[in-house]
Image 1 (cartoon, rainbow, N blue to C red):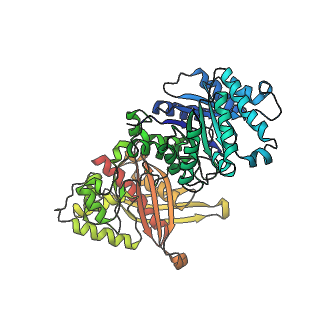
Image 2: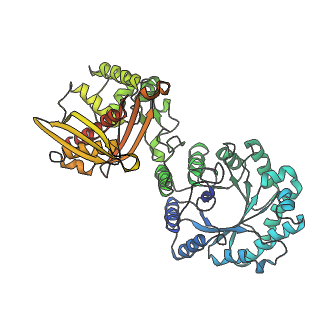
Image 3: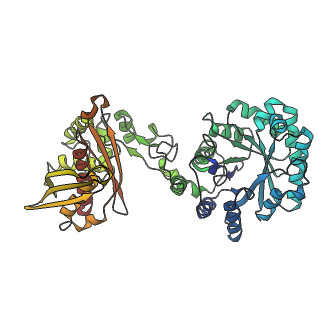
Length: 522
């Protein structure tokens, strides 16, 4: 393999600048521990001078033993006109007690003159003074050259002078930052080459994703000699986000043959991505490359048929090496191979010679035409296939009738549901109230089944989605309801379709409970 590329994670600092991202101290420590066990080289914990939360994080981080990663505190060069030893912000970087300190400074004369309102010479002095002070205090120093690429395009000589000042003062790394995220890979290559050709210290890359090339830009810099990539898990960050380490890491290893992390860590990449989203209270992006649920999902009949024969015909890599899974989707685009592979994936005995296969495929396409969707609703798909394979087996329960009504007015109203359920020869008639019609119906159905099927007490509805189909039909349009359920250890999704939203919801609810009982029976 080619020389190692160091991974610098800034999820806990730059990532938190993304809209909707907010971590507590406990959250940051948990993510840091996960990143450490994953094997990243640096974890940037925050800016000690910016808020009490980051100060507390560094206090607690200093008490912990880190197996792989070095914790980095982040800050700025000294203020203009202030001796570095008198700058409170710089002193806080020392007080954070981290082995690594990362500071940023200005490369672009626009920022020097219009933002800092200082002279070019003073800006260079600010960079050199701060790095020397940190090195004198025995810190490993990474210099982030802010707006490195825009500054170089504006004035190459001055940009180089700022980077060389950082090197002369003792910086261990000079990291080129595409802070505005507006450069193309060709520009990144040209300017990174110029930096490496004029510096003797190590050079890294820090990109943003404003024009959707953050990962491509980082890889382009590595290709021409950069040795460190800064980024965030899942691309969290200001505006459209930072370079996504979840994509950079496997591209480095599997596409560019570069070492960056312990080999055993790659199989936990999907888990890491999901973990950070969970801590951030965000739904995982199912279309995210490498780790998304849709990344190795196959829908077209021709594709599925090919994958069934030779997986690599439509997969650039084995999903398992990054901890992901192959999925076969079933829809109106499905062929026989879709049905066979999906049925086998779901534990049903079905192959290309099964006589019922043609009937199953025709029924799925018919229901999809009516508005059903089985890509997500795999539990409903299991019940459908099972029903045809076993030639309409007797259901564990059936709903004979139901009624939902509203009592009261406005916010004070109460929904009431009445349902009649048959289990074998026994008929149970129950009434329940709820916060809305679906909640009332769900409660009434569970009450009716409680005595015969006690295991259903563990089943909970975890998500409820409604989509109006053919909206041009107005209030007469069909409604599709997707319900996600869980028994505490597993999750599943079911679907119902009707012009009546209550009936569509009931169909999905019945499938959910029927599936739960089927799992127990198996």
